[in-house]
Image 1 (spheres, rainbow, N blue to C red):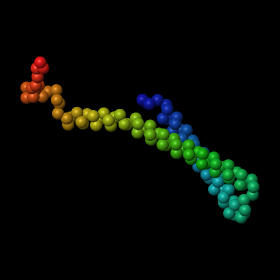
Image 2 (cartoon, rainbow, N blue to C red):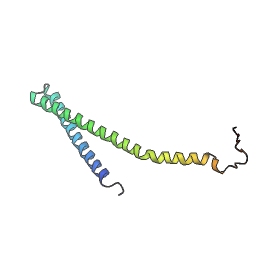
Image 3 (tube, rainbow, N blue to C red):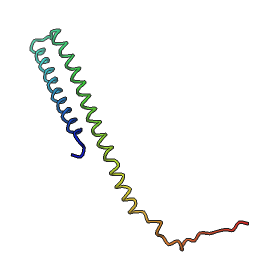
Amino acid sequence: MKEGRGPVISKTVAGTLFVVFISISYNVIEIQKRSLEGGVLNPTDEVLMANQILEASLMGFALFLALVTYRLHYYIKELPKTKRLEAAEEMKLKPDVKHHDLKEHPKRTTASR
């Protein structure tokens, strides 16, 4: 593995956060089902639901930022490769000025007196 353990660890952490995010979302849905069956939420369920929605939104935001950072890092890493390819293509398309015959265009020298 050329890149080391970093990508493996970050994917493991992201997977763990995603599982916890799904678990919290499931708990929120269960609390909402209880409120629909009973008609009214009791204060304990209201506090639990608010706390879990806050945790879920924080984890969702963290996962989103991790995804954006990952894609930005990937794009930045691939950018020099594409620039090198473009530079190589430009060098193939441009005529090489160094190898032109200089006798066709002699330099004019003027004597200044």
